[in-house]
Length: 374
Image 1 (cartoon, one colour):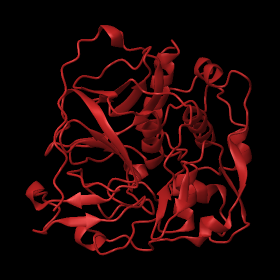
Image 2 (spheres, rainbow, N blue to C red):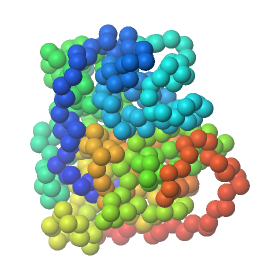
Image 3 (cartoon, rainbow, N blue to C red):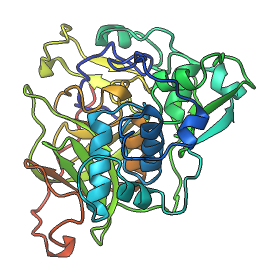
């Protein structure tokens, strides 16, 4: 059963997985599957796109996400490198030096780009070719799916569309049985629905369970820790705005909702939305809250996906915590009802948590009543 939310609104409603503010390909040196797989630091190639793409994929595998794998020397990439260095007791420089590389690739340089054959389901849709630029338009669409097979494939492999194009300059992404080169990372699990692709709700996967989720507001990241305070994952995030900052203090996860509808109430009075009536936006990866919503005991706040993965860390949200769809899904797999969520107002160390969870003073939590359904 889909629930109604007093949720966040993405500031740039027109930006989607098909073309966010950073989706345009940037000119640079040639980049191929071979150049990425063979890349290694030599002391002078710290900003080489092939090296960065390889490092991004390796960090992704280790659950130190840099957001979309884009081969760009950006802030999200450097922050992921810093987090990895801190956790592994290395000099925290944000640079892919030899010591960091050896810790990241302890058993040699395994390929991080692989061949993938486009399937019939990849190209069959359903697709939403044009994403409306405002909520009123979105509310009239039966589903907010990917805009094209290219968009679906890029998200499946955690990639920027620009990099997928660069690796496959002559590929027809809408043609089944076409072989393309993609990042060799855990695929986001989606399936065709009636009006949109949808995330596959998990069964008990036997994976790690988060005891604490830290939302580092000045650091613009979200981190998950287990009951022994071991870091499970690091994700870049878009957190709040000046208009509506994210909360502070301790809260809990109330529930995880997959493939959520998005509900707007005019009482929010967001300046980007002119309507005076309540709106419902149907599920899909281009829904304003993406493929999954992690509901918190902080009323109207949650951690969720986004239709614009390449904007993570570069834009604002209306108070909530936005991750790429694949990072939100990964975190949702680890979250449980009553998982502690800590909002830090000061940039906090990545690992390990300084005070054991068992020794932390926890306030009593009273979950707010669910929003009323009109």
